[in-house]
Image (cartoon, rainbow, N blue to C red; front, side):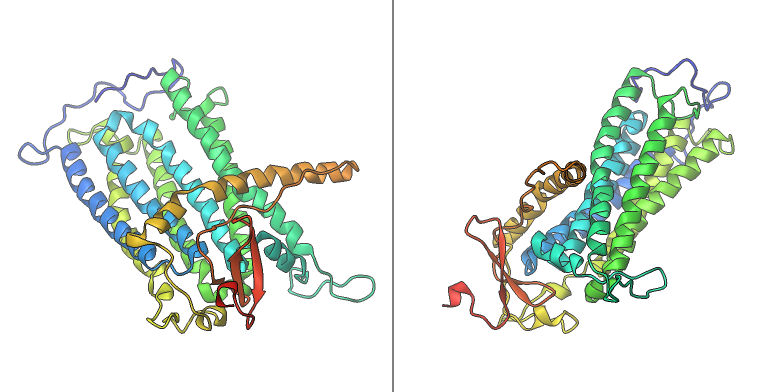
Length: 416
């Protein structure tokens, strides 16, 4: 298919001389035809496996504040697989589809960060109290003490707020970059083969690299700082599984761009320039999604969320707060409530708003002015009787959004 976009006059071409005539690999099957058939089969396989895993979480929705994020994370495999196949089929338009990968990654990474926050506590007020009471340690792990010799506290909350801002700038910057890339490519101002400061391409790449680096660094450091509290949930294992998808795709893009720009790989009678620039990388991406979809079956397994007929979790590895409480499935028939909870982006949008407000209030406090009331972040209101990591029941409050806590051993309201 031909592209209607224009090319900047100062954009160097990767094709030197006339393009070779494409001949079939065998019979009448060209590489492009083989790639979209096999790539399509891989995309379908990865999608079916991922949908089945999402459905199992939705129908075993016993810990909603965690599993709604799992459903989102698993959907990234489908997102990558489908965009990869579309990039093969619509080879000439692939450059408009590729930026969608980073945008999807940013949304899922933000959701993963909220998942780690939910492991501490689904209530933001309780979560901040835990972080504020956290004892400050230096790089060697020694306690930092105040002038009176008492352990210094509160350091992790300040660091957490900074990390929050770093993580939730990612989807906002990714959305802006997505729009800029599409507009500049359509107008002909975007040249992927040019690293000149005069070209918008290099600036978009630099901004994207900084934004992604800040988010990933903040997310990994946050996991390490609270690792002892949430280690039973194996969050690092899940983070590595998720980031492998993104890392492999990013590395693959760097390699193909460098090989093409350096002239190390060139069009042949079997592979056109479009095949090398879009078809082959996307074909490899679809094959990779098959393996990632299978890997996710282990990293995001459902066994931890299954419960017995008596309402007890079946997994003995769960923290005591889970194993000692009666729970139930909250996903509804065929898991529709679970899919709805995952599809609602209100928690991510609220978190994105929360970041700038943290900065604004910090500036206002320094100036001695009144600060804005940020209010509690909205949380799931459909899933009562949830025990958190610290052994407390979570119940929806009167406004149906705020969460209040009831110590273990104290009867729940519906129990009298």
